[in-house]
Image (cartoon, rainbow, N blue to C red):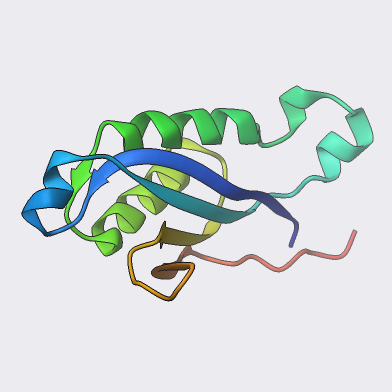
Amino acid sequence: MDLVFIEDLRIQTVIGVFDWEREITQTVSLDLQMAFDISAAAASDDIADTLDYKAVSKRLIQFVEGSEFQLVEALAEHCAAIVLEEFPVSWVYLKLSKPGAVRGSSAVGVIIERGTKQPRTAR
């Protein structure tokens, strides 16, 4: 299985359960790995044959910036669903971090996997 990844996609959004968190934007960071067979793109060297990680990033930025979730769990679930429903991937690993949320740690958050990992078939 091939993976296309995006690391540390930082997005400003309203996230949190406390009243003060509902009045400001905070940064969340997304790390994604997406199952996608890159063999056609490798052979053709044509962007039309690959997973457009810029399009994935732009879609997630648009969604997250406009959202107002309380929990990182809910935001992560919705982001994973967008990737699976709108892009040609069968599986997504998504790490959603909330930097600075807990004093003494660089970030907290959740890691989820959704979809079905498909092993590569022999060629």
